[in-house]
Every structure is written in C-alpha cells, then in structure tokens.
Image 1 (tube, rainbow, N blue to C red):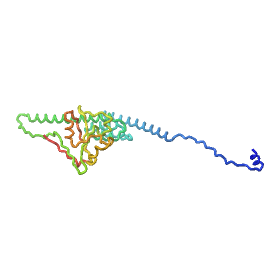
Image 2: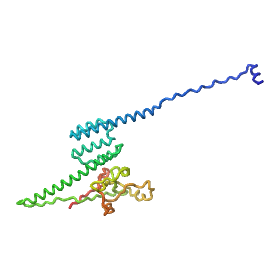
Image 3: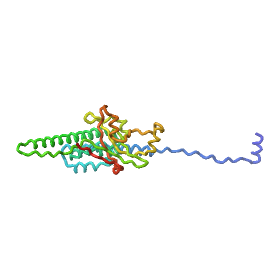
Image 4: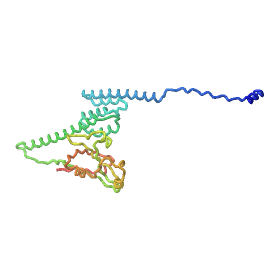
Length: 274
C-alpha cells in the first residue's frame, strides 16, 4: 500500500496495453452440406426421368415401333448406361431384331451398371435359351426335310453326308515363360458376381464360362507358397478335357467358351466332325 501511495505521489503509473477484444465468429451454413443435398436431389430427378423414358421405350417395343424410334428416346436420357433397365431395353431390341448374341451386352452391363441387374441376367439367359431351342428346331427340321426328300419314290437316292460337329479341340500356345490356361467362372463378372448370385441354370444344367488367360510359369510354381489372400480365386485348367475328366459322373455343367481378344492368335480351335 505504501508503495502504491509513493507511486501516486511521484506520478508514476503503469500503462496497461489495451486487451484485444475477441471477435465473435459468425457461423456460416456449410456449403458442402447444401451441395451434397442438392446433388442428391438432382440425382433423384435424373433417376425418375430415366425410369420414365425407359418405360416409354419398353411400351414402344410392345407396340412394335421401329428400333430407330426406341433408340432415339433412349438417347435423350443423360448417363443412361448406368441404369439396368436401359440394358434390358437393349436386350429386348436385339431379341426382336433376331440378334441373340446378348452375352457381350451382359458383360458390358456388369462393368458399368451401378444397381442390381437380376432382371437383366434373367432376360439374357432366357434369350440364350431361346437361341438354343431355335438351333435345335432348325436342325431337326433340316433332318426331317432330308429324310422326306430321300423317300420320294422314283427319285434316285443321293446320300451326301453332311459332316456333323460333335465337339471341339481347343489348344493354347506355350511361349517360354508363360502358358495359356482356361479360367472357369460362373458369371461373366468373375468372383465378385459369383459371391452375390446363385449359379445360373439353363435347361437344368449349371452354366459356366470357359475363358482363355495367360499365366506365368514362374508365378504358378511359386503360387502354393503364397498366403491365402493372394491365391487365385477362380480355378484354371490346362484344357477342357482335364476339366471334364475331373467332373465326370457328377452331372457336368454346360460350358460357354468366351473369346479373349488379346489371345486370339495363341488359341487354336479344331472342330471334330462325325
């Protein structure tokens, strides 16, 4: 106290620096949150638009309109390829035009579609089944026609025998450090698709895909020492005969050969005739 009185008598005073006043922070609405919800609303709007347009296309197909008209409606939908019903419409167009080669279309859809494609898968294999039935009926009709012609009285019988395809040999080239093998998958999409779906059935037989792939001999020799996470998930065989020998007597599935464009010059297919 005496020190304070002395300082006041002498006129000594300490000047305190002004204390900064904290500024109040004004909370602004999060722009990112707004943009997220606006993007979701826009995506929902596009989804509804796409569903309406694709429904219109399916209706036009049922009415028998031209393919050009249906495709013109489909082209109006932005990013239409990511919707499963777009590929359903494409498959129906191909079926109506007599083009049953829908397997490549299904493979492309598996790569780009962002939603379940169960309906597309059902339609694709329904078309494949129809294709198989048409081929069998055509073959039987040709056979009956040949028999009726050969039984006409007074007409000399000419017995040209048309070779009948009873099988095929598929051989892959071996090239030093690598060899061509064949990967077995239950669906074109590979292991991830197999885990999500039951095996595809065609006329009571399980449908599998037989695809040539290149494998390194060095990696194959070392593969048994790899941990389970690095082991190959899909089985590979050296030949179709090896695969059929393993499954003999257990109701073998129906195999569909899928080309690998990168190995076309390495694969030799020989048709066996009777």
